[in-house]
Image 1 (cartoon, one colour):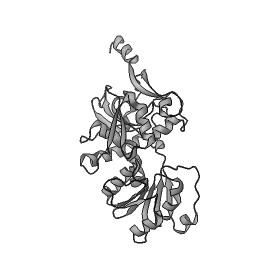
Image 2: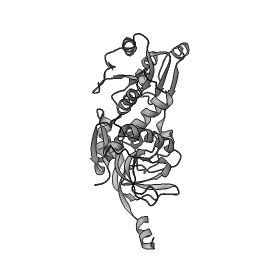
Image 3: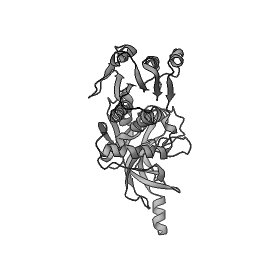
Image 4: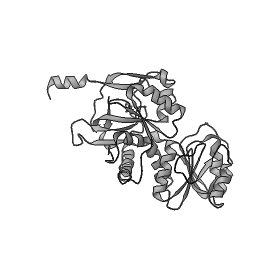
Length: 332
């Protein structure tokens, strides 16, 4: 490589979204040129064709995660490897669980034209999905797979209660559970399309409704994506030796009867997806790729935004996007 070519690469600029101050999207986010990241040893440069916006990105922009600023946010991606090496030209997808934050190594995120990633974090994109569809899978399916498959180990024939089931993680968890042969019960204030068993949490007693749907036995598993006032009734809806995993709690403290756990030998755990290893996440996406390519799983509904409209996309997620994934398009 000539000296002039190397100098050009070192000084290359890209369009990016940057968290410049903590707050609401319109005040916290800037759309501006940033240096193209330079891959280190064992890393590759990916041209990002699409990148989803998640509630975690909202929390990051709001300052709740303590990320040092300025920072390019974003964890989900679908794109093409453009740096030299064995993977050059490969279409990849996935989620860097701690990208755009400062957990372990500080790495700028995917809400930009390019992102540098460890090669072990890469998974080949499903051929059946477009770049936009692939980016929309991201953290929602990563979180759902880790909790439903790896943590709670759902089995065929089991019943899984999903609070906040109309949200992105809830929809992903329900789809994965159905593929595994389990029966999801969706609990939320809005009924998603194609749901057989639904409980309206604004007007129903959650435990009584679950018992009615399970012939008085209770749910085998519960994935609580809401927390807060739903935590205790979700716990009480489990059968003897039931398993429960939570991924979010709207309130820092909740009250519940500890005897519910002791007397029925319940297994209760939580998941902080930002602490997942990027290589482990890639292995999950490798498994998901097969299911999407076979049509056993389908991507969520998507709304796409040009990168310069990122604040509007973030605001749409903040306002509640009714089960539609908001995806940024860094390439004009």
